[in-house]
Image (spheres, helix red, strand yellow):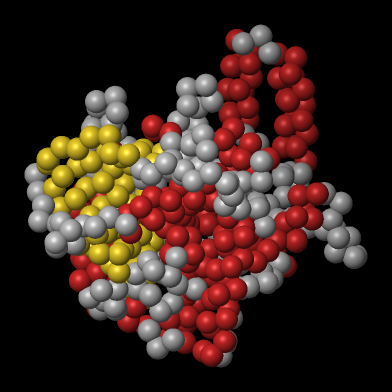
Length: 439
């Protein structure tokens, strides 16, 4: 299949091949390089033997001999059992919402244990400019310790409780970076957009009790024996758990602690997540109806359709939740948040966003859904691919324009999220109306 917009990738290049041969010769790997030369030469000479970009059966019955072609076709035609129906009768929405919540809880595979776990412990506290910084550690399940930071604004007390927000960072960023603190090694955070990703610090400066919790297998939760998340993720899967479910369980445990603090108004608690942290924020919002608002600081897409469009592009093992796509996608979970206030700060695929918008319309709660695109895609004129079908065989970079993603600008949008959440929590979880942000 030829696509003039998206030229084939991985086309053999003589220059690149010769460079590779030189490196292999230097490393004493010439025999293998010679075999590679034969393979590439025959492909280049044939002209039509370049790797295909689209899975094609080539059979009259449409079946696939290749296993990957089969699972790609399976995902392509999969209809999740609890997918949101934009034509749903509003009277059917509560039952659908309850079914989504129940199935999601089942998929999270939360652990069960007989012995109660110790309550969280305060390790230290210190006064900062306008707030108190505290370090705690929680014990959510046997063998597990999860440190977290709490930022309490000056003036907040049991006599004058304030709103609270759970803050979750992107990818491998730390709880210290959320609080604007030095990393544990005493150095400033060196991640891109570090100054903009100080989510907890921005919220506490506006009078909101902020709790910063990092992602599993990162920073203080990382282990020098097996650094990173891969071994943690795959062995969790083997044990009937997964990265995301453990992340959510840990954060849910700390959320229950937050509700019990006398200086926090438990009727005004929100969750806010950036990038990887957006998913546990969303899941907590779906599972716990007491959460008053959800900030999704990321792009919104259908993950199943993206996988189909990008030829099952490999994402981190920490992203996979067994069985989830058979029931719903993350956009369906987002639709199930209605009518509670929900903010998306980095746009996404417009057709998917319209599905979420329709869920709020069904409940006459359109003003509680706030959507902001990346500035690069802020207006319809800047989104020429909104009405175009997403082709298959795309690289991830080629997919981005179809989903209105501006990857270099991916960071916490405090200028949008903070005033929005301040207003929502000021109203006790009722609708905020930041009309200037609506795109």
